[in-house]
Image (cartoon, rainbow, N blue to C red; front, side):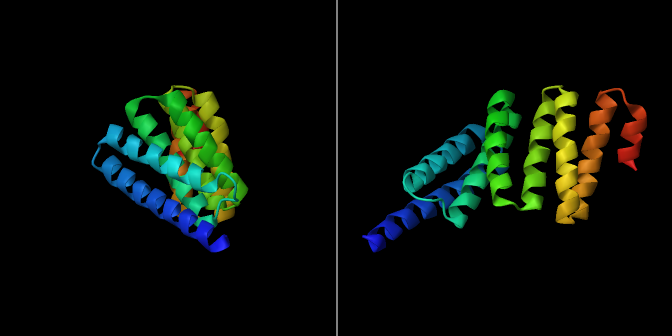
Length: 168
């Protein structure tokens, strides 16, 4: 019964984690198609292992990592709509997890996607949320990065005064 399930669930989690690490390495080597294939395989393994059970915390982290990887691979490949879909799923997962730093990070990814799509007005919504959560997370490094992105967003919207406010 329980022992057997724990074993299969653990195996699927471990292989999903291994595939996440493989996808990450491939991404860093700029082998985006291969990275995407590994990440999607990892996603499949996790979905199989969690169909009838609540997602364990480690699985939830692996799931978030895989979704984030798929989002940033999509950005690199110029598949922005696909990237936005994965980034939204990652953000929903982060919101349900409640870690303000993670939430800030996934909102930042969404802002980056919309900037890549030349939709600064859409990006503005996400970067402001990212900044708000970074404030809650008390993460000055992330705030500095986000301020730079906010500055860029307002620059692209032609709002130079606001752009300068975030640049300093």
